[in-house]
Structures are given as structure tokens and as C-alpha cells.
Length: 333
Image (cartoon, rainbow, N blue to C red; front, side, top):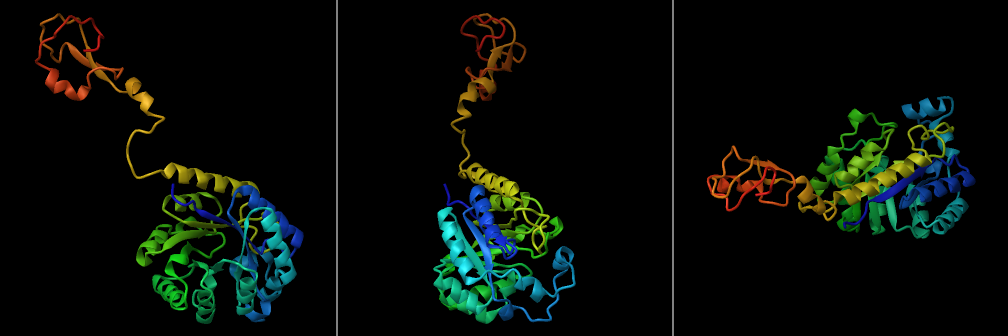
């Protein structure tokens, strides 16, 4: 079987800056069967100007009184928290990932020994940032929300020229609207990305349900990323467009089933169905009593189950030949 889809349970900032909540998110991610749980690493001062407005979805979920800077500042994880969460992930046997949003955070995650660096959609046009990550020569997952093919190509070139092997890069199709309307998902674009750049591809999902990431796996996604929370009604920008733990588990289970169901490209009877052939297929059967020496015709022959006699594909060859013995109605020829 092919290598299974790498499923990232995106905790993001849904810990609300609280270590215990972050640990509960790790519990939920590990319990769902996801491969990794992902947080966000940033120093607010280094990535957001004091006067930046909130995105529309952030205003809807957290109000418009405070600035984006003040909202994000409360969601920072300290360095000590990172150490504790990594240790907790090891205990729970799930990979710790985090998205860096500034150069200090890239360096910090590198010193923590992270082998995979996730580049968020907003950094795809950040040349110094892309070069910095490219130079680390790690596994890279690049999100492409809001980007066109030209921007993706440029970012990919920067990463490769900086030293990262193309074989170590997975590009995620994404849409950054939370939640993403179905008509804006454009999932086929994910396959376009894979074909255009001959690169491993996946999908970062912000729709409300679980069906789109499952469909993405059927279309060949090698990585799936999905936001989750302990409770959609909690305060904070991303809870509303996140899955709750039982939904996350349902998504992972469905993806694992789809992987098995995809099977090989060969079309042949499966082991489980082979026994049904004699029961479900049909044979040539005497429609009426036939005497030895009679000619087989459309009037005295018919086709019925079971499939243990002469294959009905031989119909033309049998018509017009003579019966070699007597037959009762419904006898196999």
C-alpha cells in the first residue's frame, strides 16, 4: 500500500494562550489518530504592526474593539511552553509541529529540532522568510491560500535555490477564508498544482465539515491539515471554523478507510467476492423438456442462475447444435 496520508491536526491558536488547554488539544489530536498536532510560533512585535486591522472573520469571532496586535499578543506561546508541549507530544506519541511567523521563531523551532517546517499562506510572498526556511534543508509544507500559480512557482524556486530538495517539499492547496464556502474550495486546483510542478501535494482545509479533506485524499493528497478545537463556542478567532474532537476522529477514520478503499489500479475480482460468481452469474438452462437429438433453439433454451454451467456468452455457438441427452425443464445444459 502507498504511504499513508500525513494528517495534521491544526491546534493553531485555539489554546487561547493557556498551557493546560494546549495539552488537552494534544490529547484530542492523539486520540483522533492524527499524525501530528500543529501550533503557531510567533513574536507579535516581529510580525504584526500595531495598527493592523483584524480580518473580517476575526472581527466576527472576537469583535472589533481590540487591534489584531492585541488579540494575537494574548495567543503567544512562550519558549518554556514550547518545551513542555514537545515533551507532552512525545509522551502521547504524536509529532509536534509549529508554524513560525518571523525569523526569531524560525531559528527557535530549528533549535528545538523540528524536522518539518510549515509555511503558512501569508508568507508565500515573503522572500527573506522563504530563503531562511529553504536554507535549513528540512521537510517543507507550503500553504498556498490566496496565491496564483506564478506566486507558487516563485516560492518553490526560492526554497529550492536556497538548498531544500524538491523531493522534501509538499505544496498544500488552501483557501484562507474561515469558514471557506464550498463554491470557493476549488479542490481540482490541488491536482493542478501537483501536475504543474511535479511535486507532492495536499490540502489545508477551512470548510465547516469533513467531506472536503476526505475527497482530497481520494484525489491524491499526501498531507491533510485541519483546524480543531475542544469546543467551537470558545472565545477566540479560529474556534468557529474548527472541528470538535469527535469530528476530528471521524475525519481521520474516514481518511484511513478511503486509503484502504483506493487499493491498487488493477481491476480483477477481489478475494471476498470470488465466491459469489457461481451464485450471481448465469448459465444456459433448458427452458422446456428437451429430448436427445433435438436441436437447441431460442424456444427451448434460456439463461438462468446459477453460474455453474455453460457461460451464456456461448449462446450463439450452442444454438443449432443437437442435444446429446435428455433434459428436464431448468436442467443446466
